[in-house]
Length: 260
Image 1: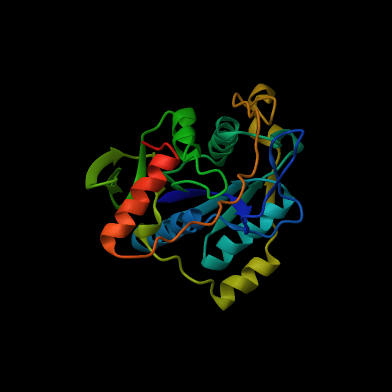
Image 2: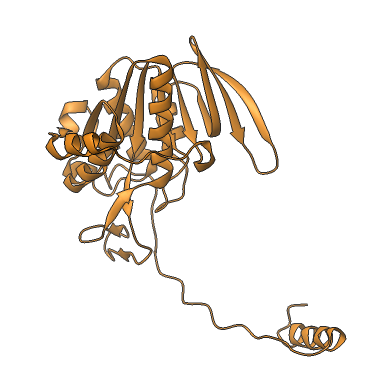
């Protein structure tokens, strides 16, 4: 089976800076890693390939340095990687990002399954995977903790807030995975050597027949009015004494702050 995994390179730090003009993250000079949930998606794809055969292709949209994230997946054992990189993509929101990835997938051709991490740790929207499914007009299943493929169907166990549910979907489909689905493998020595020598294929907007109206900051319907770093929380107060005395102090504090 042919599996496509969409990954994202994200900052390896919580100390991010914001461009005051575009209200987007400044990624230059910031250490980066593969989005952790996406590593789980890659591991899922590799396990399915080991069981059913086929090919695993990983794609990412980002600046040229995102090629390093793709090399990480090569070291893990994927078959092919594609970097979708163009100045026209700069400032894309989740709508424009999912469109760009969907156009790339159309260019790749036949596929049975598309896997994504449930969300990126820098945006936390969980929208790109479902967005890809919508652009491609195929089914989607989110928050997968277990995937079983049989023929042209997949049985998926989804992790919800209080219970898990099992659903079945025809293939091709988009499935997003949670971290509980597996433990990503460590890159092998052979894989790391292969990654070091790898020539990363790059596709630009014209290569994926992208409509300029759907790309980048201008093609993103999300309008960010303001981004700021919340001020640090002040220190708390520890109330000492006997239980009854602590309760009286707590009630007095609550009344003083007019919480009730």
